[in-house]
Length: 273
Length: 273
DNA sequence: CGAGGAGTTGAGGCTAGTCAAGGCCCGTGG
DNA sequence: CCACGGGCCTTGACTAGCCTCAACTCCTCG
Image (cartoon, rainbow over all chains, first blue to last red; front, top):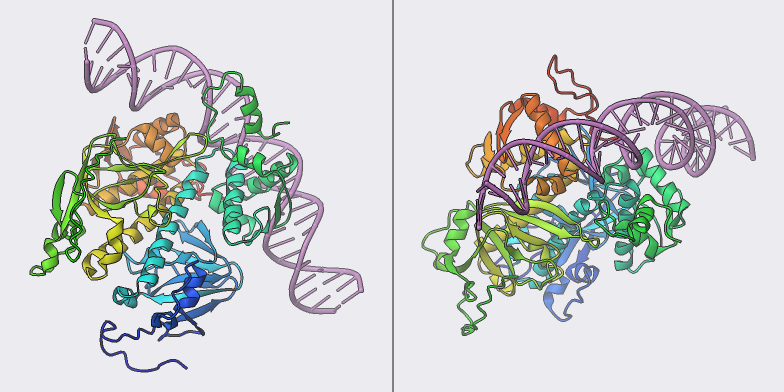
């Protein structure tokens, strides 16, 4: 179906770069990708028709695997992935969750082999941009710009792990996680108050670096104090402001003479009246 | 807030891209940067002479500040920076330590304002690549390539925070941190066994997400068991292999015959696979 | 030589890990 | 259709280890 044609000549020469020449399962175009990334493509530009491969990934299937040779970077079109790294002792550390319009595999650029594994949490599809084309993309400003922004955003997202970890208490970590999810949902135009978790407790536990039982208890505690309600993976944030207050007590409060008691209460959970 | 602003406008000559047009304190060239990044510049190319600004940063001074408008990305030429993020409750979370040949400020690309603050831990200097030039760089392959790789490496580095956090025990976290430093030192051609910490205990504590006293005790414990020796910020890894074992064989008690290392429950977190 | 920051050490309370058992959900198969 | 099975999730009891508070030492610098 694809141009099973020659791979001659540097792409620079040819104005027609076909990013889908290794098409896997479907075809998309640059304008599809740009739309996904919130960049309305300048219509009329010939490059908007630039084909870009789309790959579908089944639930629980890996998109790329740690240690294998990197061949592409990916933009999530639909579905959610978990990014994990298998440590030397065999423990699978969850590094993050990646959804639509986010980039995957950019971390493999410098080493040429994937330092992480990405696994689909549900049926998913991604745009595939082969690495060997990256160099020839100088002309295609729109795509380069999108790549830069996505990589930059991925970097900023990664920083959130540390921000989450800086909280000692499990309920605080969980509330930060839920708020992070809430923001991402909102960014995708979905409800920030009510959503379904795509990952299981084990993944959340790994991501927050606490025991799975602790996650369970933390969910219970947040519900107990009226901040959320939940049923399995279905979560509803009842008191957004309260959750936010709880989420940002990192360490023991500095010194707030009379407020100390109040802060300590919310720190210990029961929530302010 | 030392905005060493020498905002004297240069004649926007147009064709001649002068990345140092906002030169702050010194001048470098593209070939200098490429050499720093381990890419021998193809001599003879005219672009090698492309001027790139060099900015010096005094100890404890910020290179860029969270929330301010992003204007450039930086390549560390000398010195070490700590990257921090001030959370809503005022807690300064250390996200990482960045040294020579690593990139800073790339995370600001997508938002156009810095999500993090970078502070020099000692006298430092950086190459400055203004953002508004990034788009016009399509021609300069070498620079674009270096930027991509550095950003990718930064992303991979960030993942290590999570890997470190996945350890519950403080000694395990500290040993992973020391091994990380060791690797970086080796990558820069310096001794991986003996080095001087550029950051204080407080920064380490924040980075590892444990209390400062715990850091102190963990140093003591590692020395006690003969894995390292230290005096203030001077660290020597005595038993590299043992340190590595402690850092990663963390699931089982690991019977170190008669060593004082109480690796009783150095688990690497639940998961109970 | 003193002041102050950085680092260490000690005591105690409390969170979260571990182990263990039970409940819930949803698949498969009779 | 229901019964069974095996995940996933929850809950309880116990204990290890970390955070907190507080005092102290060491080092540096004025």
